[in-house]
Amino acid sequence: KYQTLVNQQIPISKALGWEIIALSEYKIITGTQLQPNINVHQTAFAGSIYAAAMATGWTLLKCWYDQNEFQADLVAAEATIKYLKPVTGDFECLAVIDKKDDNFQKLVSRLSIYKSCGFVQNIEIKCNQQICAILTVNFVFKC
Image (cartoon, rainbow, N blue to C red; front, side, top):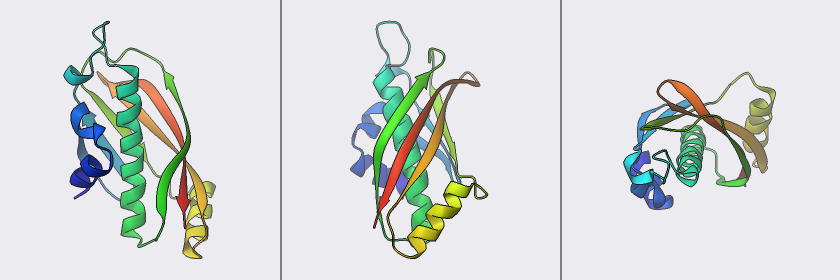
């Protein structure tokens, strides 16, 4: 369901070779192929890493609010990425929602009364079992 949705809503995801490996209400793991995203240095293109991670974070939050039947539009308001190591092969993105986090509790509270709210989500980009980059996104749930 979500693979098709992302390919439709975020068309570049298909061209990147991005796919959902595991998805639950509070965790997502995605995989992206290196080959269609390779740069002149034979590593992953920075924009491809960013796009794959953004699609991952959006998908997790979309799945979470669908499961909880909240009504909102989910958009990215601001994002920063830290590139820590070159991505030299196929890579995975991982995002987790911490149910105990105060910001998550605020999000649930506001959405419960149909109020818009921001939420910061971190997405780790891993290659060869090492964290190569971290994308931090300020998403907004617009009610």
